[in-house]
Structures are given as C-alpha cells and as structure tokens.
Image (cartoon, rainbow, N blue to C red; front, top):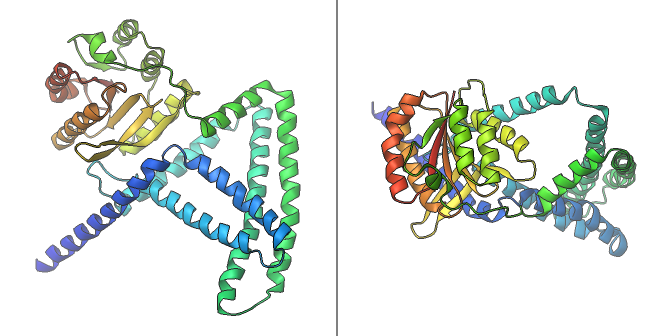
Amino acid sequence: MENQITEANDVQAKITTITLFFDKLDLIDEKLYGKRLRFFIISSFFVVLIAPFLDYLFDKKKDVITAVCTALYLILIITFFLTWISAWRDDDGNWTMRRAWYRIKTYFENIFSFYGENKDKKSSDLLYGISIFLIVGSICVKALQNASVLYRHTVNIFGDFYMKRLRGFESFVNHSFFYFLCAGLLLLSYLLYKDKEISSKLLLELKSIFRKSDEVEVFEEIVTTAYNGQKLIISSKDQLALAELKSKIKSEQFSTFIKAMGNWHPHTYNNEYEYQEKLKKHLHKSFPKSAVATEFPIKDELRNIRRRADIVVHNHILIELKKDSKTTAMDRAKSQLDHYTEIWKGKGPVVLVTCKLEMDHVQKHFSTRFEEMVKAKKNIMAIVVN
C-alpha cells in the first residue's frame, strides 16, 4: 500500500514538474504565437543561404559564421518544438505522455486524410505541390551542409581535424541543391503564369504568413444584443434558429461562422482534440483569408490567469469545445467560460461548441449560468453539434 502511494506521489510530482516547465514556455509562446512560421522561414533562409555565402566571401575555409548561425538556429528550433508541444495539455493544464501520444496519432491521421481528400485534385494543384516540395527540399538538402559544418566545428574543439570527406560532401551539397531549387522555381513560375488560381493561392498563403490579419470589424456584445435574454443555446441542426441569429447580427464574420457551424457534421471521435482539428480544418474553408488558430494563448494580467482557447477565429471568435458529458467536465467548462468571457470582453463572442451531447443535457448544465453571464454583460452562447 505504501509503495502504491509512493509511486502515485512520484507520478504526481513528475506531472507537476513538467507542467511548471511548460508554464514557463508559455511565456515565450505568447510572444511567438502566430509568428513561428514567419520566424522559421526567415531564419532558415538566413542560416541556409546567407550565412554560407558570407563565409564564402570572407572566410572560405573556417566556415565560422555558418557554424555559429546553425547552432543558434538549432536552439530556436528546439524552442519552437517545446512551445508547440506545451499546448498538448488537458483542461487542468497537465501534460502527460498519454495525451501527447494521442496528439501525435491525430496529426498523422490528419495527414493521411489530407492526402485522401486531395489525391483527385487537378494537375495544376499537383504540380504546385511538386514545385513547393522541390523548393523546400532544396533548402533541406542545403541544410545538410550546415549540419556538417556544425559537426566539424564541434569535433574540432577537441583537436584540429581537417575532415577531408566532410568538406567534399559539403562542396557537393553546396552545388547540387541549386539544381533542385531552380527546378522548383521554374515550375512555380510556369504555374503562376498559366494559372491565376495558383497565383492567388500563393499570394494568400504569403499574406497569412508575413502580414497580420486585417481588422475587419470589432464585435461588441453581439450575441447578448441579438438574443436580448432569449435562448443562448441552439442546435447546429436547427437551421431556422441559425437563420434568425444571422438576421439579428449585422456581422459578416459572425454570419459566416454561424453558417459554417450549421454545415459541420463531424463523425464520432474518442478525443476532444480530434474534434478540434476537424473543426479547425472546416472553419479554414469558410475563412480562407482569416487566421483560424488552435490552442490560442490568452491571459488576464490583473488576476495573473493564463489559459489556452481551443480555437480562435480572426482574433475575434473564441471557441471552447466539449465532448465529455460528466458533471465534473461540465462544471470545469463553466469555470473556463467564466474566465474566457472576462478575458475576451470587448473582443468578440465566446462560443461553447458541444460535440455529440444531447441538447437537454447541455441546457440543464448551462442555461442558468448563461443567463447570469448575459446579465453581467458577458458575450456567451452555445452551439450543440450532433
């Protein structure tokens, strides 16, 4: 019995340590969120192309600039990776290997489903994918040179080794990557010239990476104003209620969101984050020009509360997903929504989306609390998806 208690305490201590570690990483992630891909592309371009070129001009034999930049880049990549997996936590903020494993499994399933959904696309889309693969692949090939340079400099700390074979490999890679890059750029240039859809698609992707989303509109109590004390929980199958809601709210963004929710018919999944990934993909189709972010970090400076919203659309619509019907899960959701509506005040609505739960069950747990929130001028509603 004592051994079991000791083991349980050790596991709890381990979870607490990991959780505290990721809490610190969240402070970094708040600064990086929405900018990671931008930083990754710029830093990759500098490390893989600019640093070796500077070494070629000023210090051809030692490659010191390439080695230093590659070491810093490696630290940046590790930081990106840790901040990314720090979001794989449960509603209580705990990080576990079991949850991480299910997350990884979900990502692989999404990759395979993406391949299945896109295998019948037109030839220009396929060629576009090949051109991007060649360009990115050429950068990855070039990165092998940087890895070799960093390895040489690390080994040379313990002695002066010339490493002729590695230098020959670096010289070969330095020239061969150019052919892949040219092939990718030529194919992409041809597609941009021939297909306007491809050029629009590329421009949209670049804008989403290097520009902030345009502030289309500011939501101010739109849900509470629209309902004015009426029901705040509706079914995604109730097209009449959805149409009535859209007619009351003069917001193109929110109307698009309501329409998208009415068209979302997910399968039954075991885990909440599977619904999260599916809904993100579904909303992205309805909001191609807007950011649809998952595990979005939000905070209340006054009360020092930090949370992660399941999904945020265009920095305005905050979505909290729930599939667990247990009373404890419902109580936890109420607490989360209290925090979210307070933190999100003035930005837009907080929308609870329940998956595969009965309408009566959701109304039983949330109707009274939502009415209290509305009286407190909190922007809240729920959509029941079955």
